[in-house]
Amino acid sequence: MTVTGEWGQARFHVQVADDNAERGRGLMFVEEMPTMAGMLFVYEAPQRASFWMANTLIPLDMIFAAPDGTVTRVHHEAIPHDRTPIDGGDNVRYVLEINGGLAAQLGISEGDVLQHPAIGPDPALPCR
Image (cartoon, rainbow, N blue to C red; front, side, top):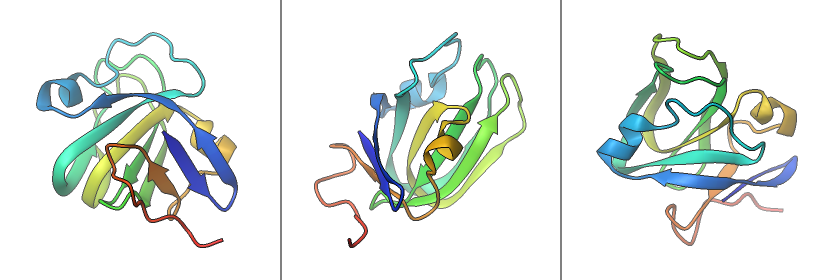
């Protein structure tokens, strides 16, 4: 999958979590993850999304996106094992989890666009 913004484009190798069991398990108990890897959470319909870090062993950045793939919120450096809810807001259909600190390093921010076959053929790419 790719994330595209004014800063450029980054490509990630992701696992897709598109059912309740996969979304519930997420990246729990993962001890390490390659730099450009992650997990894409896919929901059947837009909704309010909230995550936590119970049983998650590595810091993560959470990138929340609308149905068209537009990034609506980025949560940086979620703390391993923290049970505090991380609110992604309303109208979330996709969440990309990547290694903590990577979103800031790359410059990923609100308004950027996620692209993946699960998102569909026409994500909301910015005009260039």
